[in-house]
Image (cartoon, rainbow, N blue to C red; front, side, top):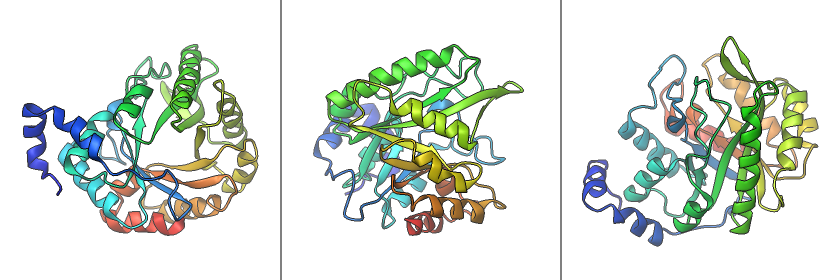
Amino acid sequence: MTTPLSDIVRLRARHPEAVAEAAARRTRRPLIGDSGRLMIVAADHPARGALAVGDRKLAMADRFDLLERLSLALSRPGVDGVLATADILEDLLLMGALEGKVVMGSMNRGGIAGASFEMDDRFTGHRPQDIARLRFDCGKLLMRIDYEDAGSLDTMESTARAIDAMAALELPTFVEPFISRRVDGKVKNDLSAEAVTKSVAIASGLGGTSAYTWLKLPVTEDPEDMAQVCETSTLPTVLLGGDISAADQDTTYEKWRKALHLPTVQGLVAGRSLLYPVDGDVASAVDTAVGLL
């Protein structure tokens, strides 16, 4: 039986052990199910201070609204699981919304959006031992490399050690690499074929083993270049979905559809575009994304 949203605060205040109890009894499933594809809804943006969706600066700040959207998304056929930080995943655990779902813990959220230290992306979220203790299924980390920012090296080294620790626990790690730079003080990710190809090559070689490493990649500016990008590594890959404007919606879906046919691409991880679609219809947006698989 699911727990109403109104009871979450009461449980957290009076019975904090309820989180561990819910994690211990959660029904698990294989990472890749019968469909052979992976459809994950992402909601780890708030912990990095990235609350905006389109022109709504605080769209993701209303936690109860976000949880309702996540619950609806997770209930749709073909949705395999969710990516989020500890606070959100534990809310969903208490709600009973993670039964039979893939649970992906977000590991480094220290690169606060807009901060001077944004590129020094510390591991402030799930540790490998937390993911194992809570019986979650995998972890995700963000690795942005700015050739002019020395903080990127710390992020790379921390990423390699996290991959090692996860592999020792036989837990998959989804690495989201970018070549980035600051433009007018803001970090911008380079989505050219050359930049994404370099990021794949760098990410694939991190750690003492790549046996449990997956890649989480954006679609390049020219989607025709994705075949070349995906030839850079044999690591299984999921596509990264981002914020989509009304004008770009159909074009973006077509880019995803084409890239999903590439041999190494195993699925899709999308967040704001599904949870906060332009027309407000979460179920329809999720069903459209599932249909692309």
